[in-house]
Every structure is written in structure tokens, then in C-alpha cells.
Length: 132
Image (cartoon, rainbow, N blue to C red; front, side):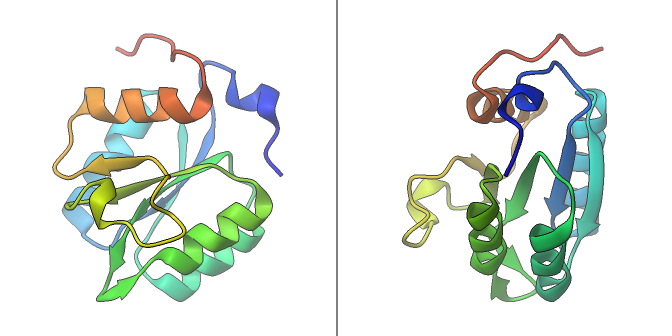
């Protein structure tokens, strides 16, 4: 279970990044670091991502819906079971999410730094400290 008070801190959160496209992963990782977070990953294999979602100490996750031809819903289920919030990253937006995850936050690809910031603020419930 995630510590709600830790989510309200301005920075320093541990973020599991599940993304199989290296260029996208590097971009997202850079954005997260600029926001002051520690990136766990990126992870580009579903089996490894599920294992990490089940065991790693993380505060939230960003999950690409499509990982190497498979769907990342098992990762989302593992995070949900632990009460860890997550954001889906997808080219199809929330309309492309399968049940029971249609109500979860989603970043529409391609996304910008401000989109990332807003999505993280939404799951954290408080504004982030200004970035550089």
C-alpha cells in the first residue's frame, strides 16, 4: 500500500516506468527526472514488469498499454492489488482502455512535459513543485 502522505510530497517519488520503445522511455524518464522523481526501469518486458509491480517499493507507475505486442493489464492489476496509483500511456487515450481500467488516468501519446505534469498532479491530488 502506498503512503498517502508521501504522495503529497513535492518530489522524490519512486516511479515504475513500463515502456518498450526505447526513445519514448528515454523521453519519459527525462521528464520524470526533471520533475524530481526517481525512475525504476524502464521495463520493456511484461513478465519483468509484473514482478516489479508485485515487489518493488514504488509510489506510482506509468504504464504503456501495449508492451511488445501484449497488453500491460496484468501490471495494472498487480499495482491495483497493492493500492499503488498508475497512469496509462497510450496512443488511443482513455477510450482505448479495457475494462476494468477505463476509469484510470491516461496520457495520450505523444504527450508533452505539461501533460505529464498534469497527469501526475491528478493522481497525487496536489500540485507539483515548479520544475527547472
